[in-house]
Length: 299
Image (cartoon, rainbow, N blue to C red):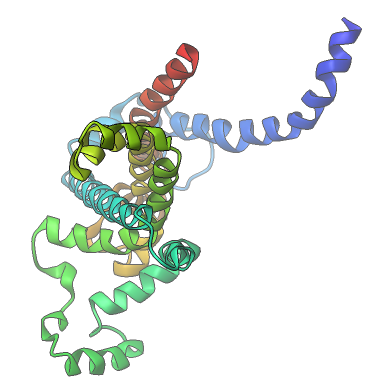
């Protein structure tokens, strides 16, 4: 018994502060939010609140504004994931073939990741809508020179949902494509050269080599990238806030709606929106974690 304590004790003491902090600030606050979502605390009043069960969730899914935010999030997620995977894979293919100055290109592709979403959102907001704000007069002149008069009005006030949310996704695609490129490039470099040589000896063309040999080897990486990007798309609050502000119905997603609801001191409704977002994340992440554990167990 004492031997086990000497073996596990120091490690447990080192991990204990992290476990306590994680338990309180993550799981404790999740439990508090879920508990609040079951009450009628729709104001900032103090004192105990009455429990109403899942009434707040029922109201949410019958509310047009919340359903609109879910649709916006779905379109944003699809546009973001597809765009990032396409550009990331394309850049990885170009670098995997070998180009002079590869390290320079890798740095250029990865550089946008060093920029915060807020800074990126402000700049892209100017580029996508240069006619708003006193700070954009220089951009107005630039776009006039380039004859880009179609950007004179706010782009989020017209056009379809796909056009609007794809425009929102564009800065995020620009920032995250380098990361996906690094994942795919590492996957390409990790494939044994013998597989390529064996395929070429068997007479496989370059297209068939990638289609039937290399790309199947990248499927675990593609799945990981899909989960990561899906998770990130749910957290693009700062980017949307910086580009369009918090009060644009056409670009509102659940995170923005939760923020606006909390500012109105409707704590129960805001907590319910947060729990719905957590459930969406769980739907994405838990199957992936279960698949990963099963793969590791089989190996």
